[in-house]
Image 1 (cartoon, helix red, strand yellow):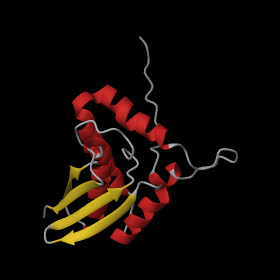
Image 2 (cartoon, rainbow, N blue to C red; image 1 turned 45 degrees about the vertical axis):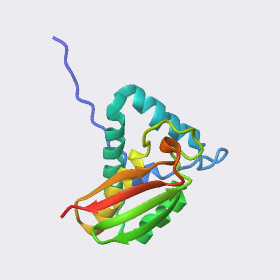
Image 3 (cartoon, rainbow, N blue to C red; image 1 turned 135 degrees about the vertical axis):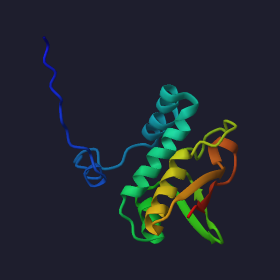
Length: 158
């Protein structure tokens, strides 16, 4: 009878993933690498469900960042070059606009929103900061729909 051994491994946390030591190549990689993984590989693997998977991944990550304020979130987005982000407080939530979005800026429109990862990241970060259930919905998209920004309507659910 064959014996099966369960391999245990440590999960990679945010802090460890952001520790980058590449003396010759540096800490930045082309946006093309991210786009190929996010838009080509995920869609090939998950089909129409790729957007939901990307949203959930972004939301989980946003909730794990340990941010204390929206300003910290905006600083992180600038540092990671996810886009130029503006946030407007509304009665029931926020309006978030992403200029020069990492996922889609410069692409030829494909007829549908593409930035579900960013929506999830925004929802996860704001939800964690406010200690509330939050949902983000993409209402405009640069590369998906040809809009000037990727816009998100962020609702606080509780």
